[in-house]
Image 1 (spheres, rainbow, N blue to C red):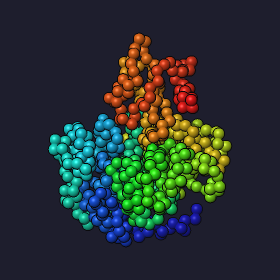
Image 2 (cartoon, rainbow, N blue to C red):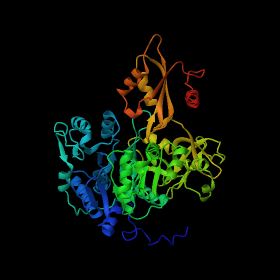
Image 3 (cartoon, rainbow, N blue to C red):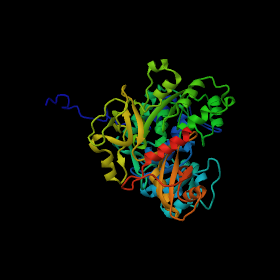
Length: 543
């Protein structure tokens, strides 16, 4: 082998620096320091000040004994401290674990324990969790953010106020890039599996590349004005905290989604971009026309989750919102595939064009591959739009693996591909399309719901003999759980009682929205035939 291109040409500090998305804020503060970075109510903060606050956070965390390899959890709405945490926590060397604000306390406590969190940054709205966390984890450092309400003293006994904590840090803190771009930057827990949630570990390299891919897929210009309709706890906001910093854009915060508030912000702040699940798009598309009066500029929207209904896609186009459909999972940093639009689609009628735009699409710019393979042989399925296989990814925009779960990591990466568990087809033009989900995951309002988890809860009810849960179409949430129940002989119970029972164990979005009683279809070996249940629901909807 001729090694003339290697001899004496090793990596040096001058020609090799590990990739990290933290550097985006450093450059933007240097070049565009006076430009607006964050809007939240009366707060209007530029990039120089935002960078200083992130460095204060990093410095304060290190002074508190938190550094490389430690976990800092954050249970926050879409408010400025959550954006600051995406930079300040990794600047300290620690790993950011954003927690789903919609989860029940037992799930959140599991994540704090499994991730071995050393600190918890928590909004005062979630005081009950803070109280439980201080009781269960005596060494946990609690930092409270009083964004919308004061802290309850009995729930934040050991807490430090966030602003006070920041003041203890150095605004000129000299952070250093990671030693290796493979180092962990974030920990995100899955919400749609059997058993306990799995901890998905992201690396600096993947976060950096996906943040740039977001720019490329959207042709996102400098100084874009981005509205945080997407929860920042979802896959680190699909890496958009880092994307917006790279473009020296504006983060317009939104504590909770409300369609009228969104239109008001679009009009007042000149919002150019936002992301959201189909439920967000439907709420905006179907809002009263007067709410969007006065909005004349183009707004770019990105949607993931269950494919939006063709009617929603057509309506968004009608009101001047350009919708881009993306696809991915927690394990791929959020979206890592996109339904890239083709010029020829513009000649199609609205229905046909919307159908093309609803597909899961092709790989992101900086992802190596997405395809559909036979799950047993890993052979590519033909591009016929009919042959079903498993959707798989390969490339830098794939997680490091599952925290403390080597078996699951090896299984999901077997054969040199990341196995999504989603079943799909390849269309003649090479685009992929989901046909089903191999683990019966229900995607409701952008949240993953395990049908098995709901079934296990149903089985806890003394009147339930057999239970099955499948997805039911819903105009607001896209999909919701529908429970089919066989009762024990002689038992009597109402649908309302079944749902009340589930409420004792499940987060509200996981509750069955309908309960059907009767004998369930089964195979000769007793396995429930869920395809029959889906057909029943579809038949009900068509009547």
